[in-house]
Amino acid sequence: MFKKIKGGLEKIRRSNDNIKKRWVIGMSALAILAITTLWLVYIDYLIKPVRDLDMGETINFRVTFKNGLRAVIDKFLAEKTIIIKK
Image (cartoon, rainbow, N blue to C red; front, side, top):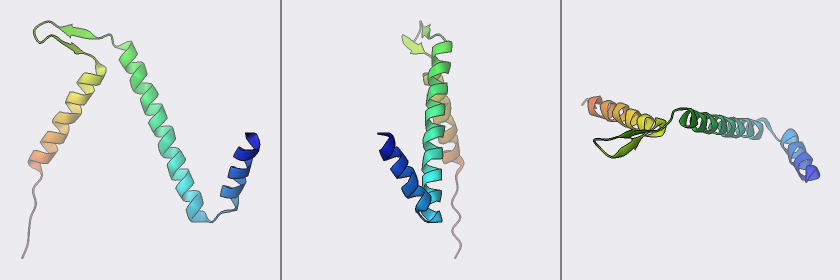
C-alpha cells in the first residue's frame, strides 16, 4: 500500500508543472470540502434542534443555513439585470 502511494507521489514529482498545479488545486479543494463538512456537522451537533410547534417542522443549523442561502441567491437573481447594447 505504501509503495503505491510512494510511487504515485514520485510520478507527480516527476511530472510537469501543469500537472502539479492540478494536483495542488484538487487536493486543496478536497481538504476545504472535508474541513467544511466536519465543521458543519460539528455546528449542527452543538446547536440542538428546536421544534417549531406552529409549523410542526424541526429547525436546526442545516435548515437555517439552507433557508438563508436560498434567500441570498433569490435576492441576487431578482436584482440581476442584463444590459444589451446595440
